[in-house]
Structures are given as C-alpha cells and as structure tokens.
Image 1 (cartoon, each protein chain N blue to C red):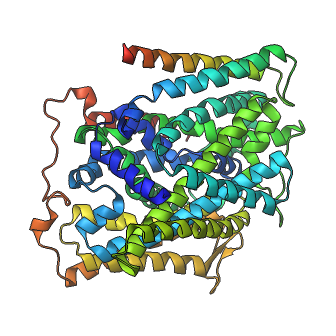
Image 2: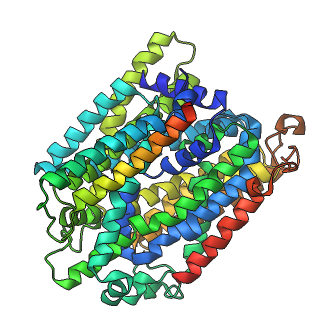
Length: 527
Length: 68
C-alpha cells in the first residue's frame, strides 16, 4: 500500500510539473535537512569542530552548483522520473537492477540510523531501556508507514524544515552567547576547532585526521557530488519543477540557505565543547568503551538551554522528523524491492493483489532489518560517521557512473555495470583492509586512520576511482548503444537549454556565480 | 485536488501551524514567566513563541494575498 502510494506520489509529483521554483528549492533543501542532519552535524561539530562545515562549503554547495548548471539538463531533458530510471534509459536493465539493490541497502541503513537516534531520544525522555526504545520506534514507524505512505512527503518535509530552523537557531545563539560570543568560544576550544583550512596540511594536525587531498577529493568531490547528484530522493524534487529553467535554478536557490546551515547545526557542537571547559555543570555523556557519545550533543544542549515548553517543541520536531524520515526510507525500500527487484526479476506478471501482499511483507522485513542497522549504528559515537560510510559505498561509485554516462557518449551498458560492481567492491575491500576507531579491518590491517570520517573519505576516493577506471576500460572493449537511442541523455547528443530571453537575475549561470562568490567569502572568513 | 495544488497551498497550513505553536509558547512564557532552563536567564518560551507567531502570521499573510 505504502509502496503504491509512493510510486503514485512520485508520478503525480513529476507528471504535472507545475510546482513553482521556490517550493522545489525548499523541498530540495528539506529532503536532506532532517533530524539526522541536525543531530549528526552537531555531533560532528563537537567531535571535529568547524571543519565539519566543509560538508557544506566545499561539499554540498559546489555540488549543488554542478547539478544545477551541468547535470540538470540531462535529468530533466531525459524525462526520467527517477535516478534508476535514468540509468535504465542511458545504460540497461541490469545497471538499473544493481542500482536498485544498493539503493535498497542504503534506505535500510538510513532508516536504521534514524531508529537508533530516535531510540536515544525516547531513552532521554522516557527513561526506558534502549532495546525497549528501539522497539517502540520500530512500532511507530510500522504504523506510520501503513497509515500514511508517502503522500505529501515533500509537503511535510518543508514544514519540518521551517520548524527545525525556528526550533534550533535559538539554541545556537544562546549556546554561543553563553560561552562569551564567537571570540569567547574560540578562546576556550583548541584553535583547530574554529578553523576550516588552517590545520589541514597534515592529517595529524586535526581531529578529523584528514589532509587537504583526502578532504577535497573524498568529501568535496566524491562524497558530496555523489550524494547531491545521484540521490533520487533529492533530485526528484527538482524534477517536479515547472520548466527546465526552474529545474536548473532549484539547487542554486537551495544553495543560499544551505550555506548558512552550519551556523545552526555545527556551531552549537563547538559551543558544547567550550561549555564543558567552563565548569557550568554541562558535560557530554560518555560512550561505552571510552570517549564521549557525540550523538547526544544536540539533545543534551537542549536540556540545558530550553525550559519546559520550548524543550517539548524541540524534542517533538526531532521525533517528527525522525519518524517521517524513517517512514520515507522504509517506503522507498518497499517500492524499490517490490517493483524494481521482485516484480522485475523474481516474479513478474502476477496480479496486483500479489504485489500488494509482497509489499506488506517487505515493509515488515524492512523494519526488522532497520532494527539490526540501529544496533550497528549504536557502536558508532557519531551517527554522521556511519551515514557517510554508507554513502561512500553507494553514492561514490554511482557518481562516477553518472559523470561518464552524462558526459561521455562512448560509455557502454557493460562498462557502467562492471564499473559499479568494481566500485562497490573497492569500497568493501578498503573498509576490510583498514581500521579506524576499531571499525573495519576484518581481513587485515594495512593502514590505520585517525578517525572513521577520514576512513570514509578514502573509501569514497577508492570506490569512485575504481568505478571510473573500470567503466572506461570495459566501455572501450564493449559495444556502445547506438547514438540514436541516447538523444537527450548524453552531452553532445542533447540540445542544451539556452538562457536567451531570460532576465539576467534568473539565469542559472548568474545565480551560480553569486553562490560561488559567497562561498569563497565564507571559506576565507573561517579559514 | 492534486499533489501539486497542495504544494502551492503550503503557506496556509504552515502559517496555521506556526501561529498555533507560537501562541502556545507565548502563553506559557506569559503564564509561567519564572520558568527558566538550567543555563539560561532569558524567558525562552516567550521570545521563541513571539518569533513563531510573527513567522506564522507572515505565512498567513502570503496565503491571504495569494487567494485574493
């Protein structure tokens, strides 16, 4: 049921194509800006400092410029309704199938990570045992998915986006003010926590444990471009636009508020570290096995700065966002498994009632798998670390496939398929052969990373490079699809949109330059 | 009513939501004016409630202008 609704919703959302650009821009931003982001980025702020802002200032925002200016003509022009559908049109059925499987795995992890964080929140509010709290989360999501499906998901997310901005910016302001403003906060924490570029010459200089290349290539190029250019929950919002111009402007308009998000979600994490040094009675809870449980930074700060009333609003905002995020992921898992895997490859040509039953069972299985993922997430002291690990397996190789698929007409279906497989395997081997904070290294330990985030960046780099190289090699020795079938899908075979007759301030190129200038200013200011 | 029409009408329900939440918080801030968080001296409920009221009112204004 939920799966049908999702599919129906997607179709309705993209078929009409008359949603104004300010809504698609907000939706584009909100699709990723949930409780997971708030909790995870605040945790990373406390663990890694303002370097976390690289997720936005060399990561998300340049990627949003790229997708708006360069990739959107092919997504929107292809009339594909989703990212897997584009893969099918550009390459073939098996590439789409492979993407469907990895995407299904990603949704399970994503919903599991939310389930874990929601469980923590219940534990904080209700004081129950963790297992009881996770089961409670699972029960709520099951009910939520059966009752509502995804109809109006975007609508819901935009409302939650407003609530998160209004509900959490006061916390950022109060926490920083308490530490004596920016200067007071900076004086109380190590210098590396308030500088984004100064301490990245050597990996050992900063808590993230990355040097400039790992950061720019792993986070900036592969992970961020991979996420923002290939995640179909995000891209779908731009495809709902009323015109090609609107679709291209969607990520560019979303980039403006996106640049400012670090001040709301990351800065409170840094303030939390400063507060701990002030001896005012605030401390992060310890993680079993040593260190702090950074995932709880945001919630413990709320408890210190929000009185009964506002605290309720904040906790409710987080819970609502986790639940809809989880329900969205479980419904997406359901859709992808039932239609893109089961119906396409396992048992096609069955009556609708059969798929309906399969969909119901899939939902339950999806939630059970999410519970397992939740326990895995519990072993990380920062949910952002495990989230980026999943992205480095799934989105990083996929981004190489898309780059080659969109800009090199010689890329063949077999090239894309084997490239993707090699990319995912490269990610797996990098994880199995290296270790960071006790994670990975199951086969052997060839290298030790100072942090799991550094490990994630390098997994992403190896996954992307492997997919890129293997796709090119296999493409050169296999037969490409005839060019007549690739019209509208590849650079060189597609009529590119021109901006003639569009007033200058509405042109994607002009918007992109303005975004880039502001971005440079931010990077220099907080260097 | 199709999904897209609903999306166009986002201003109205969001506006109502924030006016309601803002009114509740403002009410709490006024009635229980001594209510303070451990590390904060300001009346957070009142301040945050007023901001939400203004934001909700702004959305309702947009919705009203769109209709007429």
